[in-house]
Amino acid sequence: MSLDMSIKPEGVDTRHGAILYLDDVTVSFDGFRALNKLTLDISVGELRCIIGPNGAGKTTMMDVITGKTRPTSGSAFFGQTFDLARMTEYEIAHAGIGRKFQRPTVFEQHTVFENLELAMKMDKRVRPTLFARLSSEQEDRIGAILRLIRLHGHEDRPAGLLSHGQKQWLEIGMLLMQEPQLILLDEPVAGMSDAETARTAELLNELRGKHSIMVVEHDMGFVAEIAQQGKVTVLHEGSVLAEGRMDDVQADDRVIEVYLGR
Ligand SMILES: Nc1ncnc2c1ncn2[C@@H]1O[C@H](COP(=O)(O)OP(=O)(O)OP(=O)(O)O)[C@@H](O)[C@H]1O
Picture 1: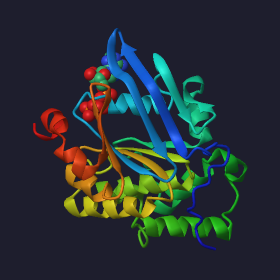
Picture 2 (picture 1 turned 120 degrees about the horizontal axis):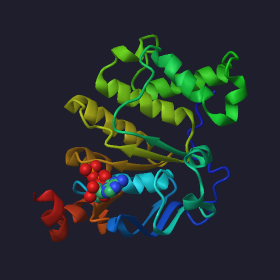
Picture 3 (picture 1 turned 135 degrees about the horizontal axis):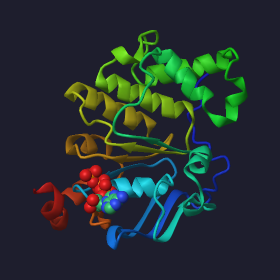
Picture 4 (picture 1 turned 45 degrees about the vertical axis):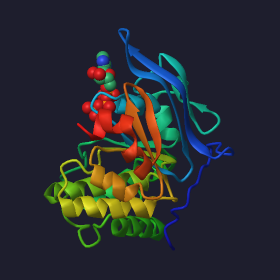
């Protein structure tokens, strides 16, 4: 049985084509606006890159999407109907938004295979099978993910022995096991070797169109590799400064001034 990597927006109403809508979102910390009337939407199957200088609000935006931070004003919707501002972090994760933080957090003592297995079994929808044996379908799914994340042949190694890049891929695989509707990746290639960065770009390009993904990254070479067919959003002082094709964004004088030209 082949891995079903198609987008399954079950429970998420994406009839209008968007998986995420942020509308006029402001987040104030003691009067300081980390997000300032931020408006942004992500289409189903899109791979969107978010760039911007330190302090632009990228992390705060992801915190709003995952329920860690509440908007002071404005609205955040997952599909048409899930009002993220009214949901707990747990409910948001359960509804299908998966986030990968910058540092890998794999289970180091467990093998690569076990990490993927644990991720699958932590999926709330299949929790009753926590101690059950894997079905052949589940084993096939893990095998397909292993190939996708370039760890085929490494499945019996303890995760603690993997390189930094391999750990990052494993964690992406663990997210994919849970079949999230929207994946948020925070600086996935930070600390990776050039070869690992190139392979991560290949991996994300393979996921394009099959998953809805938002990637926050500072590595412009990497962004150029994965943004060839998609949009790049530049955040600055909590708002969208520019958005569009990578070439256009890179040529934008305002972007050069606040970010690229530094
Ligand atoms: N809990 C908080 N209390 C006060 N200020 C905060 C808080 N969280 C973030 N900020 C401020 O909000 C602004 C935006 O921060 P944020 O971390 O979202 O930026 P970023 O774009 O992710 O930056 P970086 O690229 O450095 O990760 C910064 O000036 C930061 O100091």
